[in-house]
Length: 363
Image 1 (spheres, rainbow, N blue to C red):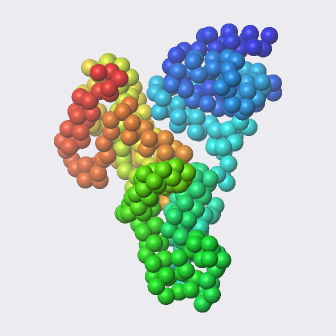
Image 2: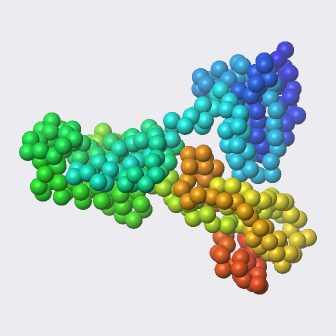
């Protein structure tokens, strides 16, 4: 009877973006999901398929009802899903709610032998250099181990001495544990790793790509696959640093997404938050009026934010960054000069450009 009831309820769902909340027999929310097409996505939970992972099968067995919230865009569904998961902490959304899944890369800069490792906690002004937070500890571990192994800096000694470590005899350590020229080479490698994570020098990544190509040419496909996986993990770190740097700048962002030929949605975003959103009919809105509204809203903003990006902010920051880089929307950032000027000439020109650039889906 429950399955019949759920399938009937699914039939009434619209084929539009939104969020769905799966509930158990106690009416407790056990899973929150988002969808571009609500009807199709929710329907999939009640269709038997060999491709369903065990988690989905177990979830479906516990569903007794569901609620849904409609949104105008898929972007809003992503943001709402993130908010609801944090608030309700559903059982089947463990991956997103676990703080231990987030981590930092920390460089110890004040020791004679500089080191870098993974940590779950960031301490302010402790003299160490941090990168992150990253949302996947497994990917970070893979990247760090790959770099260390590739450049033979897997030293098994914590102190500089005249005796080489065990990994030196295994050709996994260049011998920085012995000091001298090897220590200079090690410090140069560490400087390159820091530059890589800072987005300033991609030489380590390029070197690994060359090694992957060489291994492939020599038909050593096992080694080539290993380098491929390492490169993917390093790209994960670089992309996440781009998200963090972009968000840290605290820019005022004006975003426009066309919903149809006649309507569009306007978002005003700061850091990892949507400050304001509204739907407009294209031929009924004047650019001058829109510019005034945007400027007045941002000038009234009192949102106080720290420079550093916390673990709690990273989910929304990634969603916003991915959205801005997609083909679904157009955006521009406001400078303080634009907000301080008496006239809105620059703001109006930027708005006209956005309004004249409809998304490929509507072209």
